[in-house]
Every structure is written in C-alpha cells, then in structure tokens.
Length: 382
Image 1 (cartoon, rainbow, N blue to C red):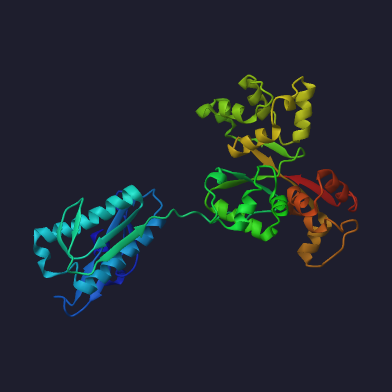
Image 2 (image 1 turned 180 degrees about the horizontal axis):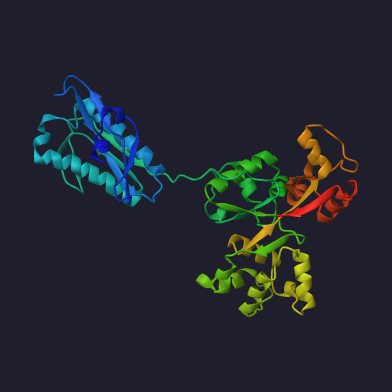
C-alpha cells in the first residue's frame, strides 16, 4: 500500500485513492513530484493524505486533497517550505506536524479551515506563531456537502416545504424565488404556483429544483379524490408504532378536536387498496358507520402516508392500440375522437399530467377517451 502513498512517478500529480487491506478505511491523496536540479536527486516528492471510512462519501474530500497538494507545492516552490535543510531539527518537524494537525482538527470540527502560514519561528499543536519577516500564505479549505442532482420538476407535482422560509428569507433573496416560495402551501401544484406567483412555468420549475437540491422541499403527487393508494411493506412500522409514529400521525391529521383511538388510523391505512379510489374508500367507511371526513383531514392523512413511505400511489395511464402501432411504424395518424388526448395515450403519460396540462379532471379525461374507436383504449394501473 505504501507504493501508492509515496508512489512511482506515473501516479504523481493526480488524485489517488486506495483502501487498506481490511477494507475498513480509504486513503485519499494527491502525490506531488517537483523536478528541479536544486534537489539532491533532482526531484522532491511529498503527499498529504486524508483517511476516511470506506462507507463515507469521498466526493467532498477530493477538493480538499487537491487544495493541500497545490498549496504546499506553491509553498515549496516559493521557499522550500517542506524540503529546507533545517527540517532535520525537531522544532521544525513539530511545526509542519502541528500545521497538519490544525488542518485536521479544523476540518473535523468546523468543516473548514483558514490558516495563515509563513516561516514558523515556533509552533505547537494549538497555537501558531508566524514570522513577521516573511510574506504569509493562507490555507483556505472548506468541506461542502455534495448533493445529488435533483429529479426534474413536473407541472403536476405539489411541493411541500421542509422548513419555515419566512425565518431565513431576507431582502437579498432572488425575487423570483421569493414569489414562488410564497405560493408553496402543500396544496397547489407547480402549474398553479406559477400562475398565482405570476412567474413563467419554466422559471418556477428552476426555482423549485434549486430548493430540491438543497433538500428544502419535497415533491408529492397532486391529491385528488380519484387517486388510488395502497399500503407499502413499511406499513408494518406504523402498525407496530415504531418511533411513536401513530402519535405523530394523530397530531398531523385529526381535526375538529376529537382524538380517536389509534386503531382507527391503522384501519384507515390498511383499508387502502389498488382497486379503490380515495372517494370509494371514504364511501366504504361511511357505509360502515365511520364518517372519516368528520375526524380526519384526508389530504394530510394521505400526505403523511406517502412522506413516511407507508403507502404508495397507483397511477393511471391510457393506452391506445392504434397510437402505439403508429409509433412503432413511424407513421403519423389521426385517430377518430382523439384530437385532444391522442398524444397522451402511449402508456407513458399519467392522468396527473393530463389533468395539469389540459386542465381537466378524471371524469372529463375518461369522457374524452370514450370518443376513441370502441376497444382501442385500455386503462392500466401501475
């Protein structure tokens, strides 16, 4: 493993990572080789490494390693900071070791460091005394969290805020962002937010994607009583009341003052199924003597289940045999009765998208699909 820490020249001047033999730690380095006749062997090599657990994301540390390499390379070229003859003295060895120790401590404790460095006349682990006879270099480094690129924002999605923006927003915020945030209420879809904020739809999507990137919001499906939901395997966590989830749900969904026994929440969740819309689910409980709407905010109830992963959405799609055949052959056709929805009948456009883009509800969509030739359109759920 040592041959990769102080490696052959082929590995120098590039970012290198290696795991220890037990595969518990990862060593990140950027070995440097400076060629110059002033050195005894016409070259000087060094490498500063960071050690992390193999399970830790190494991406944020790459910039730090590269910065260490470039900074000390420049300091070595300027004044032979690392290779100077008097490094043989214990005092100077402590100086460099202490500098590295301070960098490590600051990165661990504060995720950043800003350390002025010149020629040390004295140094120990906690304090740095700098020579006033030399211009100072400064080591500036910061660990930035690396976020995954957020998924695309669709016009039929509904943003839910995860923080109180009013407490952190100030006059320096982008005006478009402020207008979009003001319309986020957990009910409006992206299309309606753009309309009410008087912001172009594309700009609204970009603003929301920024908020997604920084994990400030999450996106849910448009809530409609024609939606279908079904329990996910994680429902068992709710039934066993893991992390007091049932109390959390009660606080979030109950209305009009009553606090029903937790059994009712379990009953409501487990009675959702792939063959029943929310409207049909409500009617079933009403017929059984339990008027859900008198006690539960159904929208918040469904949102809670989706956010916690207890239930999943079953989407509805329309598939036209004629339209699929035209896509396969590449021949453009016009299907009788399909003027409005023909391009949505390839099985890839859910009813939510049709609702948002055509501004029509589930019943109107079904009415339009009935105008296609008999037997041509099938509805699939997935």
